[in-house]
Image 1 (cartoon, rainbow, N blue to C red):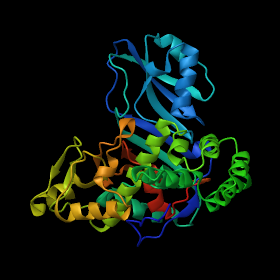
Image 2 (cartoon, one colour; image 1 turned 90 degrees about the vertical axis):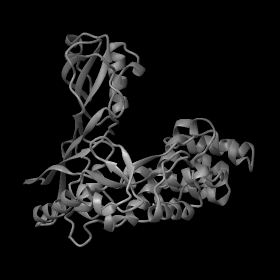
Image 3 (spheres, rainbow, N blue to C red; image 1 turned 45 degrees about the vertical axis):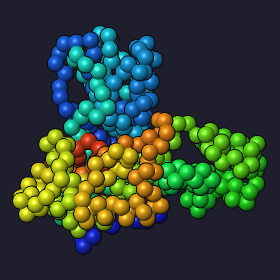
Image 4 (tube, rainbow, N blue to C red; image 1 turned 60 degrees about the vertical axis):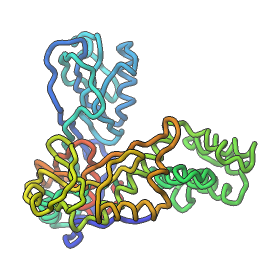
Length: 404
């Protein structure tokens, strides 16, 4: 990343420590938006997965049940880390057949019928149980003090470093695309040798920077398929930067653009950190009960609602049709865009890359907090609404952006 964002609880010490790649150290459970009705053609199946992504779990269910992956619904995407409980919907299968499944990495917990396919976003939130190892001696007291502030003021709704890819460069690729700078997009895609540990990967990046495309292509590790394909096109057509970048899958291009939106939003969160629990005139306020937004005209009149956590200020996921705030808030968002060399018109891209934009709350509530110690470390439990990241809680508690 280009910058390190500040902490809301900077005056409180962190617990330090590490989160290791042990499945039992990281538990996530979806909080359902609604329960299945008990009738209908779709089977709502609660699964527990370990060490695999949601998409891989769907693939395994699809193969075993002979159901198209496209027909299987899920409310949220979960990565491969730790132990995750979530619900998927599967059409036209018997509960007994699903309950009898034995799949590597997937355990079926329950199955009940419902009328509709489960769709992305159809969840209230997630509950986390995370163990921090090698923390400070007084870690429990430190964690409780930080979590008390987050409970009262809200958690800064940062996307955070995990949004920007292994090299922390995804948003830079997206920014170059928005600016129409395809050479800059290729440069950012290949990345920075200082950002990688793998010697072969680093050598590939250094060769590219020297202009030796053949050596770079040969050196890139197997997982860097996209980089190799882009450079192979560039080797055939020197200076054909846009043509070369078209080797990147459109879905991946969209992810880079989304990462840029996320990083710009994070900049606004950082700028508003001191007043994150207050709404001001010109704000577009977020109603936590239904996600609607409205323009704040009388901040004194709305202050009690913000204090009760009914409403919060919002920031931009910039796009061509995003609703704009007013006054100082509009000036702040315009300055963030200008600092990145972009305008709202930059997001009016052709075809599938077009970005409409939306508002996102600058803070979210942290619920049902519990801190306990066990022989392996400090266990922290909390709930977050959908779209919020546990890493944003952990960075405040641990006072670090590195969670590996």
